[in-house]
Image 1 (spheres, rainbow, N blue to C red):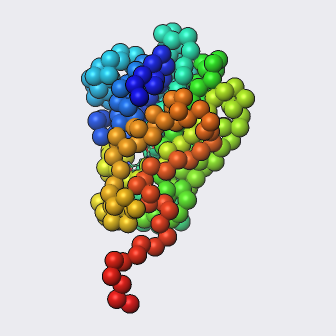
Image 2 (cartoon, rainbow, N blue to C red):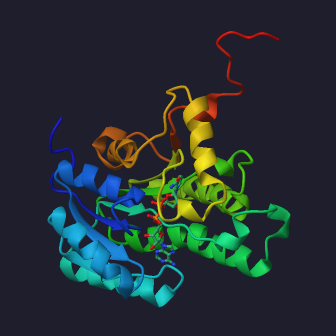
Image 3 (cartoon, rainbow, N blue to C red):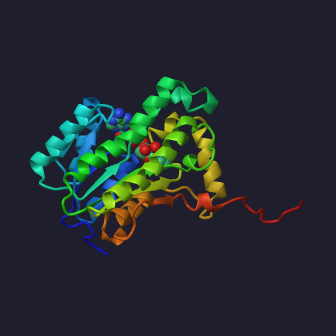
Length: 264
Ligand code: NAD
């Protein structure tokens, strides 16, 4: 199929470099004819994001720190100066102090708990509200989550608690915005080596474990996530909202892996 996103305009948030999950999603959307805008966190990232955006034919870029309400307002002001409406938003943003992405969850500080929830959970709600105001003809919103929301994963700690809240917020917003034809979904991606992931303790071990224990016996890539995002953001996903869709090589369905030749 070609041209699934033709005539559609959307905002990609969370592109840091060509390893970002946002990059896999942006490429899949641009391949299908989407017109993209990008937001980046702080001027230092602009020089990384600009050439990547240019590769996909996009020149609409704006700075946005989702910890700052005024910065989110400014982003949507910029967007509405160029576009009269918006069809989709990809929110590929999460953050926590990496000193607390190791050790025990129970030791999480109040300061980092609040900051992690603000940047990784509330920001999607704050962005969704602003985006919905630019979606008179309906639209599709997507965020990224991880299995650490559902089960205890090593070192994921406060981020797991935040992702559980993020997934709940997807369900509440699906109900709130559904009457306006706006769908809200999450992709629960398997572990992928990115800048954000490098802050998580023992990440190489986690990736190896997933590779050995997932039904597909491999890790997923940014391209795998991009293709599933295309489904949720295009008309192919027209009947889907409030969903957390796993793109994890099937890891989440396995209770216990069988050995090929059990000797016990
Ligand atoms: P990444 O480092 O490439 O992207 C994270 C992005 O968040 C960066 O672009 C960063 O600038 C942005 N960000 C952080 N704080 C921000 C703020 N205050 N304002 C604006 N932007 C801010 O890493 P990634 O792995 O591509 O992460 C994207 C999303 O995917 C995150 O939500 C992450 O939790 C999620 N995820 C990642 C994995 C994985 O294994 N990499 C698995 C499942 C889910």
